[in-house]
Length: 56
Ligand SMILES: [Zn+2]
Image (cartoon, rainbow, N blue to C red; front, side, top):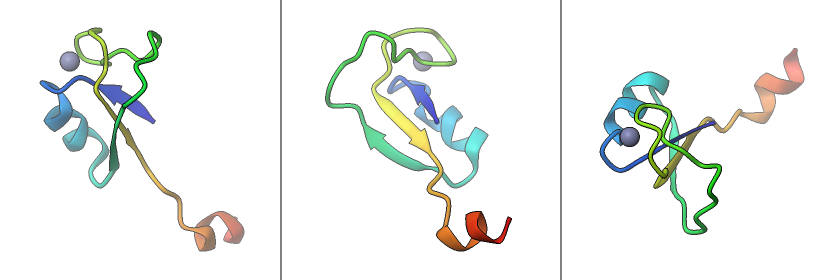
């Protein structure tokens, strides 16, 4: 999972290809944009399908 600010959400989307995006409603100070190190506004993350994790 990565966290990005509003400006860098597109960069984050390009980085992860098909991530899920969730707006950070609780502002934890540790959540910083990986691109500019400002406070992050969005979380980008994969949701791993159960089938894949079980097959390994
Ligand atoms: Zn940023």
